Image 1 (cartoon, rainbow, N blue to C red):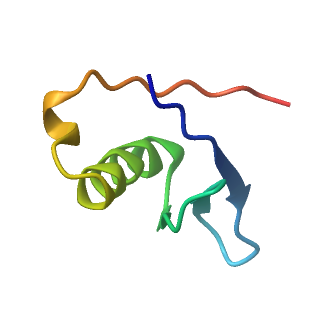
Image 2 (cartoon, one colour):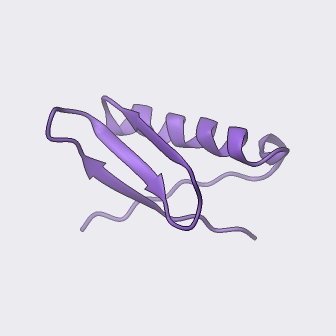
Length: 62
């Protein structure tokens, strides 16, 4: 099982950005819900065949 951790930050100008630790994956969106969808799309683009794999996004509030 591959686990990729994203750092999610609120942008000062509005919206959110996410960058993966240890991988060149970055995305941004206006809402957290949109950001989750963009992260899934970015993972599919970065890793061929991921669309066939089980996907799970969890978040931890600090």
